[in-house]
Image (cartoon, rainbow over all chains, first blue to last red; front, side, top):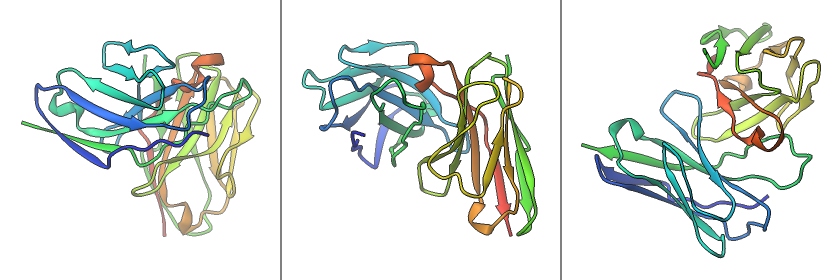
Length: 113
Length: 114
């Protein structure tokens, strides 16, 4: 499975865009990038995923570089409620996979007033 | 919809006691999962189920058993609790196919074994 590397922590001012980077230089051509977050003491929450193209939903945008070796999760207008640990996960390839998610250490995003 | 619910929210056990954690989902999901999360660590998959009546081992299955007698419920059992099983347990569910990685998580059960 492709390994991901994320900064340990980041700060962001409330109302500003939060840009969370992730490196996945060993990703293979058919592996997706998923983002989850975990607000303190809660269960993880799915945010977004993508393969090659940029993706946007009501929560965030995902920008994947052309060589697919890195990606950035963008929260366009961060609020205090976005303070959480954000996990970048590369989905294992193959149809026989269980749905197992491998959560690393993630990035702790602190949104400050 | 309640989504994914877990019972109980908190529990303290003594070494050697047994207990069952209940997970329920009302989204008609095929897949269900049990993870554990230890302090400062990511989640690790204990057992999972790809449909009613099926179960399979995950990454750290030892000391746990599971059952999926009904599609909406997934039970995690500890037959003889050990202090190493002190953790936060999360249940999750998902659709099958390519959406199985879009998992919906419950609020967690905080278990302490003394």
